[in-house]
Image (cartoon, rainbow, N blue to C red; front, side):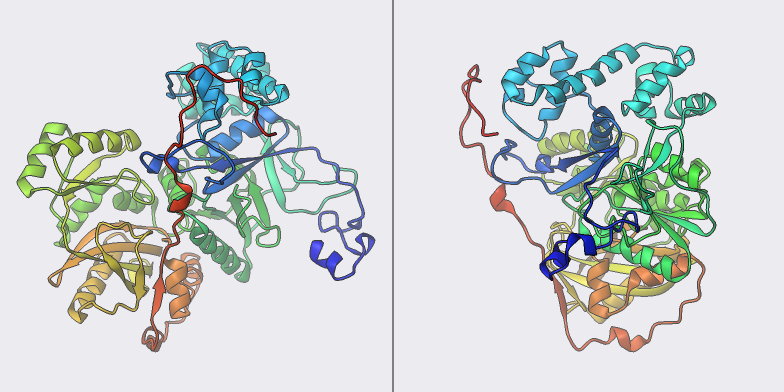
Length: 590
């Protein structure tokens, strides 16, 4: 709109792309609420001030859409993917709750929940935080419902109360935790009561004119769908969620290219994502865009409404990958590599066992059961050792341990993050170089691949390392061995689609670190360097389309591509001063 106005168009000469009937000279009327919530990753850094001020510290954001403030607030908190189920205090603790409310930090929202839970008045919270009372009363509504929910028996819950919970943004999981039931039991119970969400369009005319937009959201504040669902030849692609350290625009590039490939094959594409900063959430990319949570509950709601041919989980990074097995067990058709094989690769113990059976070298490893066994193993192989949880992104809780004291500290950290999956400890090889492969396979047969080398030695995370393609300092024999191992792993895991393997090399010896059966953050880099769209090839192969073989000369480059990271450490500062313990009378700039 702004571009056309600059070029000299008038508002009445510009078509309204939502209605396709009226002009842009029209005052919007909204029947929905949108909430944007920042995503911080400050917990990845020690001794960093978490206080929010004039400098931006968030690395991403989410956007939630609904028909009540309570609904969108709880949706947005779950979308952050920080392990919190809604507006709740969870396990958060502080020595001075009033101070935690008075000073804005990345955790203040959860301190507000704690204060309301403990009975602090809205007026007192307003005095401390200067947050408008309207928002605080809405937050109070959520806490009141949560208090009423506690201790109730699911089977005795009234339809009216259950519907009110859903309209105020309570997830099935939240209700399950409060009623000592399972998420599956809550879902079955509400569906038996015919309490289901409806599909609504983002309609800037509040139904005054017919809307033709593909922007969709789901809510319990309605009684009918705005669109027809269940069309033929529909494929769902799960997006990457909020940008964070380790997951940024690279995964969105993969999602968009997957959707473009589906569109070219005459499939109707459905994107599920909630990140307003992405291209995948542009209105002209896909046939239907659900601005919704990527939780098991909501993806199943959409799946049951739309009845697509299947869901692609391998393009959006770790969030969709973590849903693969749960969706599979719920009867969803996962397109590409089997979720059972995804679990074999993500589960460190299972994957290490597979490598042993294939006689593929890996650093000596052991699955952790208790601290004493970990100590014995670490001293046997000699420090340093590497602790690796399962199902994590960007090395979260993956730590290099140098001595017994660090072993105790890091084991506690790792088990907190991955309490549902085993944690593996392995020998960390010093003075070694890291090499990685981004590849595409079809039914276990390698289709195309790119071998990249890291400039930094192993121990610097691949997302932070400088990567070179084609390799400049790697022996031909090492590259031959890497290609052979890649073929073996692709065959063993019956891979169909994109995957990434990380290797460690020293003295011409190659060992496997890990394998991800999904796109990686280096797929855009290798695709643009080789001028071969790996994601487009992968999508076509996953859809059983014929893809011509790639000309071998495409890999014979007369130039070198280098990927280097951009850091923002200047934004991460230590606390400059400490507020007096009981002084909260300072004024804030509104």
